[in-house]
Image (cartoon, rainbow, N blue to C red):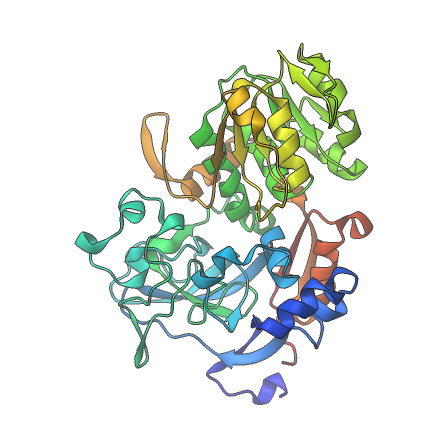
Length: 431
């Protein structure tokens, strides 16, 4: 349908639906072909969908400015991600959970934001967003950490038309709550954080992924002068390097990245040294570690090591490396989306008395004696530092070029992409 004759209650959005045949296709042909996971055979398409309506007077209508593409999105679309979290989404859904938007209208009960403001959207669907009364909130939401909401697999109390809000953990993987890969969305006022005018759109669209890293760094709290290793080449690894420096870490930060342009940018973000994965052994020895070769298997180390290792990949290889590189009684922060692994030797967890913690999302933080949301802290850090974070946004495409955008995000070694974003065009595309 031509956009000029679309129904006034419709919009364009990149939608995704899941099924067993698509899962099988993605797990086979999808490994070698973008066509099967981003093209017609997949459950992904640019479609005309109804414009979402605010379900009550504390909700806000938003126009999307930009929506980022996350590594999690690529993993889900290619079916490389573990199916463990599948019950906590609802489909078909307009994708996109990294969202910068502008307020279009506000309900009569909204006091947090005003029409015309730019806002960063916290995509987590909390008990409050689901319509539960305060005394019904789960322990996670009561603690200000709704990314682990106990009700994410259940229908909400809020009504969408004649039925309750569908299950789902986040906007963008939710049948009733379209994400940032569309023209419009709605959000509860508790999900919205006004963006400072001092931040340009490229910085502001990064608030969500930066907040993931800020949350992990604040929560694991490495000693300020400790040696830290950051494993990963993507935006979350880069955000972790930035967060460490922005939060005041003064100790050695060693970043491990694959490609030259990524290593160069890690240095700009504050890494003291950036190594190729092949140089990890040398980096360990530089900490004072001694290498030993068992009869079978890779080298292990004694002494030295890194007080904290941030694994921002979550593969079997990187988690195994993190276990080997962590100092005795050190910590491993799993920030990447680790999934199912057939063989992972956990001997060093107990032999080195390591603490392994996973981190997801963001929420209520304690920082310098103040309680504030991670998005608020992230904005404060962006304003307070002159680190060129905005340069992480390397590629931007209109919605109708979503397949090109996803291919660039999936094949970063060929495209040179770091962060890819989708932007609704001034004139809506055909959909």
